[in-house]
Length: 543
Ligand code: GLC
Ligand code: CA
Image 1: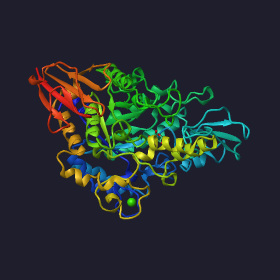
Image 2: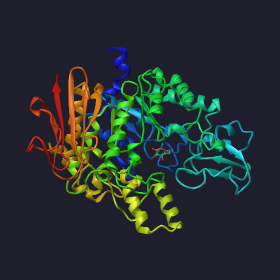
Image 3: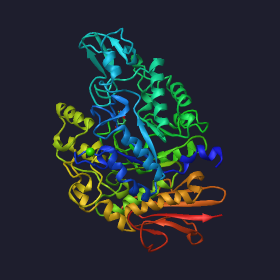
Image 4: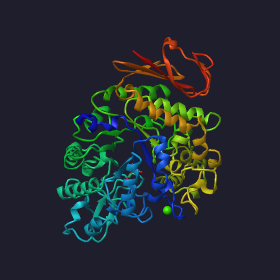
């Protein structure tokens, strides 16, 4: 394999995200763990994925389910031991699966040794590892707010100072201006690389270069300088896949992050399409219908802009987002069809697809009473909006639509108690539809959502055009169809999706008889031009 091909192995890869807490429990304590993941490697290999991105398993007080790390070089006992992690890396390798770890570098836990030291005195060598400002109790330095609600400043009376936190009070922001902080981080990353880690997902990386006095939180002036330094000192020494989480990325910024010269990351997660179904300028909880033409425009623009000068990540779901089939498909009558349609639409595009656990089964959102929710963001919002006098039913409607817990209910393995996730009491309630939607049932069914994902993964590995073909949007203003082509020198594919639940004639006038139907989500096509509810097809032409 040439060096170039090797370095870019991830261009043909499909990645699977595991939220360890909710994937598979091995010891009956109701919390998923590393041994549980090891038990399920055969399942992942059957699906055909190349790598697993693990949400954080480091030592953590779990204020934000592990995104608050108290020791970057150890595993939290709820998930297992460092030895289990090493076993997972080795066993995964035997299944041709690489392990991608989640790196949370914008902040640590307030229970991290550095922060405990930092709080001791202004002279402590670790004090400057965090972001402090003098002030008076009750008058924070400014009105910046944290992403989970409340002020971004927390008062520490012993020091007469505030510390800065963009997330919960238990997630103090690290001070990247301090070169010692950066060096410690690089050493830690290299330590994991030496253990055989295949890559990293970099949590809220666009927020590391903050300048709170100027109210700059994301995309700070030194952001790309810091990232390039980190990349040079760590990732570039190995063939790693790296993906930065960047809510505030524009295509221009994404081209920096995913520059083909390898100076920063392999790719980024951008969220422009994800933010379309909310009221403009408001929060994600302020619901709005999906503007379908806008969705086409946004996805097409990213496809075009990064072509040959960057690299996209393709995703609908993750541990922070509602389930796509409930969100933009139909989780009732056409659950299977719409889940597959959404998969086809995404996996035909250029970029590296990410599948979030359960997405490959068409798992759905939940609607629980408030006591059943566990997520700090959801619970903070609930309280805040109650205090502001919002109506209970409106708050709950927002939670049903957007709560992060929609994605965090246990993986549905089979129809036994607790969906085969645990023999104990699960930390969060299992979605009651597990008797009907589960992996065991779908593995037997050649027509399942699982089978569709499996096929799409294989197609990407079989036909070059999925990796390198240029993208062209078709039917830009059509209110029902999402259609596009991908084309390279030798091959062309047409991806045509009826995005809604009505039978519709597709206005495209190609000669389909000249083409092969590579994939269709209905067993039979009634008429070439007539698309059944949520019907999706991929046609292929060898030139
Ligand atoms: C990212 C994570 C999210 C977490 C936050 C703070 O957005 O995906 O789960 O709460 O960062 O670390
Ligand atoms: Ca467990």
